[in-house]
Length: 65
Image (cartoon, rainbow, N blue to C red; front, top):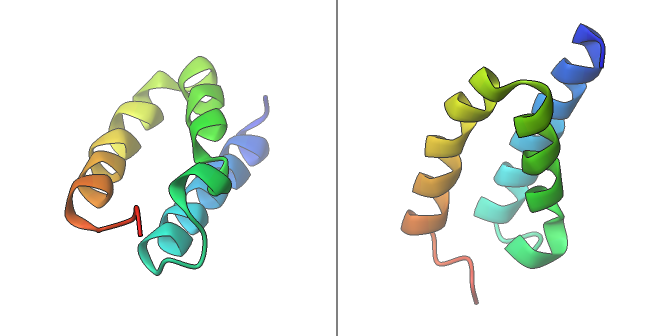
């Protein structure tokens, strides 16, 4: 995976997190889990950076409405 692909993947994950927070899409329907797994395989350092933000979002927002 090139650097450009990695940047696109990060942007996609962050956009999906924003959509989940604003409840435009549910956590399950967003497909963010697969993207996070792909990110972990490709760049574990970036994964470790994004994961705390993801966990915080899941804990604070009532995303299961």
